[in-house]
Amino acid sequence: MPIRAVVWDIDDTLFDYTYADRAGMRLHLAAEGLADRFGTVEQALAHWREITDVQWLRFADGQTTFEGQRRDRVRQFLSTEALGDTAADAWFERYIAHYEGAWKLFPDALAALDSLAPDYRQAVLSNSSIHNQDRKLRVLGVRDYFETVLCAAELGVSKPAAAAFHAACDALELDPAEVAYVGNEPDIDAGGATAAGLAGVWLDRGRLGGRPELVSITDLDRLPALLRGDTRFGAPSPIG
Image (cartoon, rainbow, N blue to C red; front, side, top):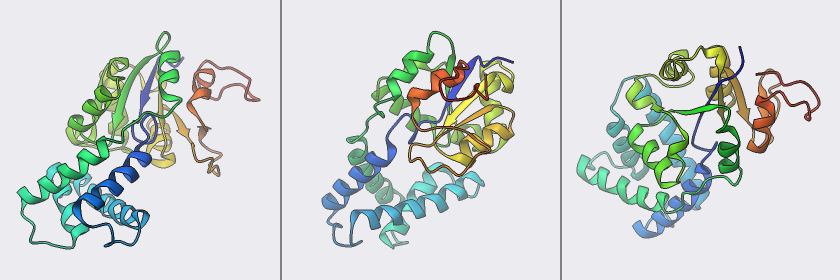
């Protein structure tokens, strides 16, 4: 079947999450008087991300709520279990304000969305919440490109589970074989999508390579030609 729709990941795919994450953490540590507590911004960010990964898995497994995993991230980061919910929420909101101040799209994102718009339907599937991601897309000025935005917090299932990808296909009323999924994580995004019957595309911005079983591109400028079967990259497109 020909590809009729492209479903997107957001963070570190269209949106430069890594940049915003670092800039937001640097500003937040300074504002909270924590600049010297973790050595460097990179060390603080590594600690925050490690905590986030653990707490997100708890949320994905149904062990806590979306708000609960946020609060527990703050408590672990500050090494205090005594912090109440209200105080943890307030701390997280202050962090979010610094993080959001650094939001930006990747330079190739808007051109890719524009190029695909005439020929492909577009949607989003994210391992986050609709409150976060819908607002993010609106602030970045790209929400109108997408027919629907689906997120794990509301679906009750996260990538790489096939059910998450199938939910996006169902929302578009398309067979999985008619849908491409583009994301920066080789296993969660491209691998999960491929296993679910979609055409998975790994956006390998870091040029890590080493995954010959996956269809990969190193920037979004290459995506339209890949989807349309262009042979400029040395071989017929493996999808579409």
